[in-house]
Image (cartoon, rainbow, N blue to C red; front, top):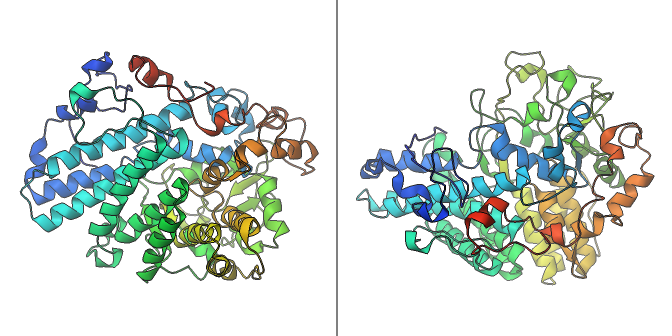
Length: 531
């Protein structure tokens, strides 16, 4: 997508300011957005379309460290991954705060970036909604573009609600005199998200009704319904999750890819399973192949799969998804006949494993048959796909006591990779099987499903994350008995650092509000408990 160029005097989130911004919180002009100088873009259809297209770029921003890194780091912070880069680990305190769960604080870089860049996206949408609402362009086009921005605003607020709980709710109607806003409750935030996504679902076209290949990546009715289902799962409104998910499936617009590995092919955009994705190319694209690639293949070596994840695949005899998720040292690379023995760089890689889902086969690279020489790679960022939606639907159905529907959806996902059906399950046992299936189906993907599930799902009032991490956490204890020849080595820094031991159960289930936001708010914005 092309990025609209907007002249900003001050464009930021909350109290986070670019170098040209005023320093007083109360001097901030409506999140800086009235200072966009070229409101004339809203006078023409082309200008309005270009502005809305620019709002999509806020999802990934424009460089690897802004949002792409923390999305990788959230997956790394679970039982699925390691930071991985042994050469850089000792000097990577900022990465380790979240990635190794060593010190989640109000000044942690990943915490700040998630908060800051989410609000940047929200601000861009708010300004667009306010100005487009007054535009005299064709009413049908205007409604669709407003729905796209409300979808995106809901998307950004979801990232905040999942990770911070209640946050200040800035909208297109927020007045300068009202700033700073106190935090809304988490229930209020989820209700706001629902309203945005419901509007989007009602007013966006189906993907098949977009007329150009470029527009296929825009938010669609299916994308809005998928995120509406997910938002209601988080909020515990399982009936609403079932309704939205069943409506999406009733569109008959998406199908599971017959070959699981095809989902992750290079330069394969808007496939039949993909519901919402951001495209990429060699000029401004996907950095994950390089950031998480083997150091022996031109990669940076950060963010790698764990042996615990591999064990989860082996325990289920899940060979298809295992080899299409994990590349292991000394083993062939699925889908790349040129690599029969992978160099996972054991001397520089905690687990000697890499993510297959990010990997670009040698023949598909530019230049071909070489190690990575360009950090931007032509592989889309898939945020939501049908298998994820089916498992969201399955979990909600299971929690409502509809074991037949839940099992049917679960087993459709399993059948695609030749696994036997799971039968006779109900209640907690069925929910647990679905959570495991999500781990195996979606491990390593950009949607951070494992991180989300560990923070969302509770057993006896305790999140899975808090039961697994901390001094007595089950995963922390498992690490002490791990016998994998790579990520159990006692002579490498990341293993001896005791990943997760310093996690504070309960407290760290939510990120802290960034300290700069607390200070700039003058006491109006309160901190999460325990920080």
